[in-house]
Amino acid sequence: MMAEADTEENVYREAVAESPVAPPNGDINIDDLLPDGPQGNIQGQMEEFLGPQPEYDEEEEEKKYYRRKKLGVVKNVLGASVGGMIIYSVYMGLLQMQLILHYDETYREVKYGNLGLEDIDKKMLMGINVTPIIALLYTPILIRFLGTKWMMFLASGIYALFVSTNYWERYYTLVPSAVAIGAAIVPLWASLGNYITRMAQQYYEYVNYKDDHVQEQKKLPKGACHRYVIVFQSVFFIIFHLSLVFAEFPQRIFLHQYLSDYNHTLYNVKHCGAEGSGMIEGFNRTVLKRLPRSLALIQVESVLMGAAFLSMIIFLAVCGAAYRPTEEIDLRSIGWGNIFQLPFKHLRDYRLRLLIPFFIYSGLDTLFSVTGLTLSYGVCTVGLEWLYLLVMVYGLSCSLFSCLSLSLLRLPRYVSLLGGAVIHGPLLVFLLFWSPAPRSPDQLPYLLVVIALWGMGSALNKTGLSILLGMLYEDKERLDFVYTIYHWWQAIAIFIVYLWTGLIMRAKLSILLVILLLSCFCYWTMERRLAKNMLFRLPRIPRPKHKVKGYRYLEEENSDESNSEESDEDEDEEQQEEVIREDFGGDAGSQGSDSTRERRGGARGRRRRRDDDYEQAGEREEREKEG
Image (tube, rainbow, N blue to C red; front, side, top):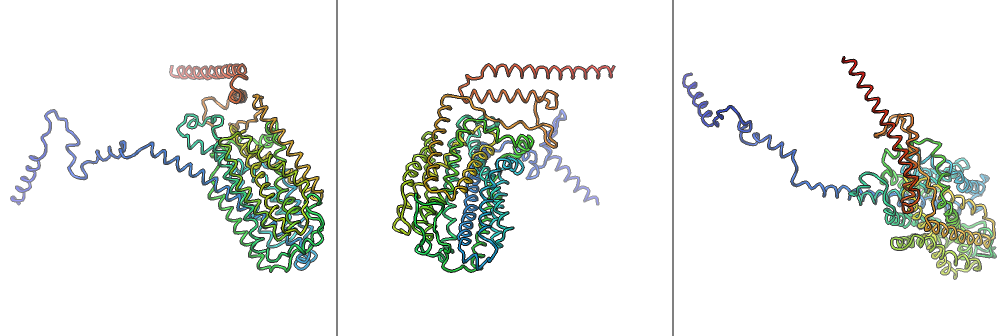
C-alpha cells in the first residue's frame, strides 16, 4: 500500500512539473488549460466553421442560382408549348376523324341506326363555336379563382374529357363535352398568352438580377423585355403549330386505308374554288370503302387519351407558377366586381380598340384555312385522301415561318403584322379568280404552294399579334385581361365563319379582304397616334383591400385609418402621372404630379401629426400614473 501511494504521488508531481507555470497575477488563459490533440482545439474549429469560408465564392453561387432560375423559365416555356401542342393535336385529330366517320351514311346506319348522329354532330359543333361568345364574362373570374397555371391544367383536362366521351358516342356525352370545350377555349388561350409573356418578364429579372429596379421589385424600364417576348412567343408558335402536323397522324395511319378515292367521293361535284358554294357542293354521302372495326377505333382513341393525359401531366409537373403567391393573393383580394369589369375597362384604351379588326381577321383566318382553303379548294380538287397532306403542309409552313418573327429583334414591330397582310392580300385576290376543276390531282402541287404561302401569312399574323400585345402592355401587372379580349374577338370571328358555311366562296373571300384592309388601316392609325404621343387610358388593377382575413401588408402608413381610401386614390393618380411621363417624355402632366405630391404630402403630414399627438398623450398618461 505504501509503495502504491508513493507511485501515485510521483506521477502527480511529474504532471505538475510538466504543466505550465501559472502567471503570478492570477490570470489564466483558458486555451492553455485545454488538452492537446483533436479534442483540444474545439474553439478554433468553431471559429473556423462559423467564420468566412475562403473557398465559398458568394458571387459565383449567386450566378449559379440565377442560372438555374433562367433554365427553369426556359423549361416552363417549352412545357407550355409542348403541352398546348399535344392537347390540340389530340383534339383536332380526333374531331377530324370523328366528323369523317359520322359523315358517312353507311357508318351511321350500321353502327348507330336511328340515333341521329348527324344531328348530334351539328349540335356538337354549335356548342364548340357558340359557347365562347360569353367567354368575356367568365374568363377573368376563372383566372382569378384558379390562377394561370391551374387554368391551363383544367382546360387540358376538359379536352381530355372530350376524348373520353368518344368511347360512348351519345347525345348526353358528346354535346356536353363539346360545350365544355367551347367554354374552355378562351380561358386556355388567355392563360397561355399571359404565361409566355410573364416568363419573358421573369427571364429579364433573372438576367439583370443585380439592377436596383429588379432587386427593389419596381416597374421595369420601357422596352426592357421586348427581346425576350419576341423570342419566347416565336418559340411557342413554332412548337404549337406542329399540332396541325401531328393531328393528321390518326387519319394517315389509321383512317386513310378506309377512304374511297376521288372518283367516287367527287363524282357529283361540279364547281370548286371561287365558283363553289358552301363547303363542297355535291360531295358524296359515302366516303368509306369499308367500315373500320370497333376494336381498332377503341385502340386509336386510347392512344389519343394517353396523349391527352400526357399534356395534363406536362402542364402540372413541368410548368412552374407564373406569379408569386402574394401576387395571386393580390388578384383574389380586389373583389369579384372589379375582376368582372376589368376587361371592359381595358377596351377604353384606343390601342386595343384599333387592334380589334386584326383580332377578328386572325379568327377568320384560323377557320378559313382549315375549312375553306383545304376543303373548298383542296379536297374538292384532289379528293379526301389528300386532306392529310394539305393540312400537314399548312402546319409545317406555319411552324417554319413563325421563325420570321425573330426578325423583330432588329426590325420595327410592324413588320410581322403588315408582312402577313402583304402575303394574304394578293393571295385573297388570286383566290377570288381561281376555280380549279374537280377531280384534278395534277393541281396538287399548285395547291400545296398556295397553302404554304397562306401558312406563312398566318404565322406572321398570329405570332405578330401576341408579340405586339406583350410589347404594348409590358408595364401591366397582369396580361390575362388583354389576351382575354384578343381571343374573345377571335372566338367571335370563328362563330361568324361557322354561320357563313353555306355562303358562296367569293363572298367569303371578299369579306376577308375587306377586314384585312380595315385591319391594316386601323393598325397604321394606332402607330401614328403613338408616334404623336397621344395619351391613352391605361387601366390599372385596383389595389387589394387591406382588411383581408389572414393577409396583411407591412407598410409605413397605417392602412386602418379612416382616410386610407383617399391615400390609395392619391397613389393611383401619382402612378397614372408617372406612366404618362415615362411614355411621353415627362412633359405632360407635370403640374398635376406636383399638385398630387402636395396633396399626398399634406395627407401624410396630417397623419403624422395625429400619430405624434397620440404618442404624446400616451406619454402624459404614463407620467400621471407614475406620479
